[in-house]
Image (cartoon, rainbow, N blue to C red; front, side):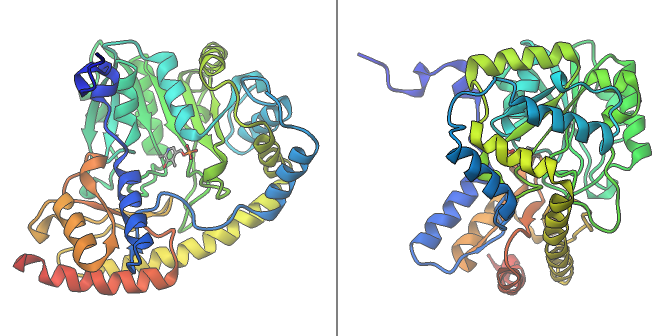
Length: 400
Ligand SMILES: *Cc1c(COP(=O)(O)O)cnc(C)c1O
C-alpha cells in the first residue's frame, strides 16, 4: 500500500513552505465569501484592470489563431522589443534578443535563474526582509539560503561590509530586489554600485529582481545593476515581468535577461518544464512594449492613485501609538514595525483578522519578525476603514 504520510514525499516537497502571502489572501477571501466585511491589506497585486490596448492586442491574437505552442524562450518579436527596452531604458549595453527569455511569470523567471546557476550546497545571500519565495526557491535547487538582515534603522538596505562578511567559498549568488517587496525600499545608485563591486570581486552571480522598477514615488530613480559595466552585465541575471507594472498578474508573463550561457541554460530548463509562456498573452505584452507612450500613460495613471493611497496609509499608520513606519518609495507596500505592541506579528495578524476583520501579512514570512506588510493596492475606502479598525485594535493590544 502507498504510504500517504508526508514521509513518503520527496525531500524537496517536505522542505518547502507554502507561500504565506497567498495564505493570508486566501483566508481573507474566504471570510469575505462568508459575508464578512473584510479590509484586505494582504494583496500582492495591483487592483486595477489591465490597460485596454493590451487586452485588445491579446484578443486579436487569440482571434488570429495564435493558440499554438510558441518557441520556448518567447516569441521573437517580444524578445526583440524587450532587448530594445533593456538597452534604452535600463542601459544594459550590447544586449542581444537571444539573451532575453519570456517565462510564465516573474516568479518562474526567478526560479529558472536559480536552477540554472545553483548546485546542491551552494550558498545564496538573501537580504532580509526578503520576498517570501527566494529562500524556498534556493532550497528547491538544493542551495543554502544565507540571510543578511537590515531593519528599518538601515532603511531596509544591507551595506557592503555586511555583504563581505556573509561571503564564504561556497557563496555563488547575491539576490537583490529594488524596489523591494515587502519593504518598498530602493537602493540608490551608489549603494547598489558598492554592493555590485563586492559581489563581482567574489565572482558571484547577482539575481536582480526588478519587477517593481516602474512603481516609484517621490521622484526616485531605478537603476539596474547590469548597467554598471560589461562585467556587471555578465554576472547579473535581471528578472522582471508584466504583473506589477501593467496590472497583469493573471496573465503569467515574466522576463529574464542574462549572459548568453545562462540564457541558453534557462531556455533549456524552460523547454523541459513549462515549454513557453502562453502564446496569445505574449502578444498583449508585445503591444505594451511597442506602444511605449500608451504604456507610460497607463503606468502614470496607476502611480498617481498608488501615491495618494501610500501617503494616506503612511500618515494613518504613523498616527497609531506603537507603530513605526518608514516612508517607502517604491512598489505598493508599507512595512511598519509593530514590535512594541508586545506580541509576535503572527499573533497580531491572527487576532486582527479575527476581531477587526483586517488582513495584513505578518513579517515572519519575510524574515522580519516584529514587522508587518500592508499593501495599498486597495481602495481609499478600505484604507480609511482599515486604519480606523487598526487604530482601535492597537489601542486594545496590551489588554489581549
Ligand atoms: C510579484 C513578484 C514577483 C513575480 O510576480 P509574477 O506574477 O510571477 O510575475 C517577483 N518578485 C517579487 C518581489 C514580486 O513581488
